[in-house]
Length: 342
Image (cartoon, rainbow, N blue to C red):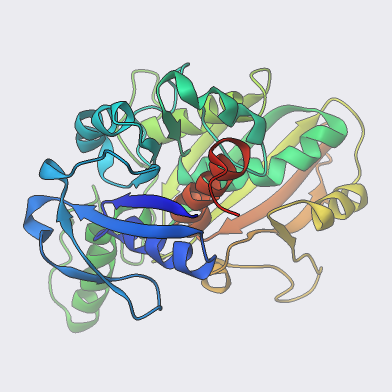
């Protein structure tokens, strides 16, 4: 017997990707419900490439009773309203928003990194999915931390516009087109022109000058990986449709060479090492789209610190950064706790 699964926010970028991945990975679901806001009620949405169509139901009137788990991709405000209702009805919520990530009673999970932490989900019947930029980084850091113990991480991100949703993708497309034909490229979604530009600003500014996105990378890495690791981030929006990239400088307690790191990463779960020191011997966002892996390239020793490494990390943010990680959490939850499916 399989699971009964709800996808909340099924009509959005991440929700559609969740449906695709559930189908691709042949998740053992007997029934899948597509749920969204009232304006999408009655719409038809495809369940992956199965040819099966799901009728979108209104989240305001949805009965969560009898459903095993729900993957939420509806933003913090809606999650604040509906996640407790679903959880109280016995439906375990896997949430993509930032709402519960730092709640001490809610596990924040990347299955390749801290699968055992999911055992605490029963406190609120909710599991949090981390920020997209954090998720791919900790997948790359975990095996290296196990080998040589990380002291400090300095990361600069190059984040695609899909991280800002459909509106972000539309703005990049429209501005690029407008610039080519000589029309106005005034920003609407972003604070400055994104086409042919980069913007060192994601989410709101905090009192210390960092942005909330940068703060998330710090606190989430500590919660998922190790509270003793020091992290500083600069998060930048770039004119790429899908795929986040990161330049990561790591300082370790113990000695580790680039060659040792390459060997470790080559065998690490969820990591694909593509690291040839030649033209094109690395992965860029264009090549990672549609893939499950977190790609690591350009591993090299940092001559400015003792026991330092520098690397390049790329992943499809709609997949590993959101939808895939959520489905992997659902699989983990099933294996460790629900155990309904064969």
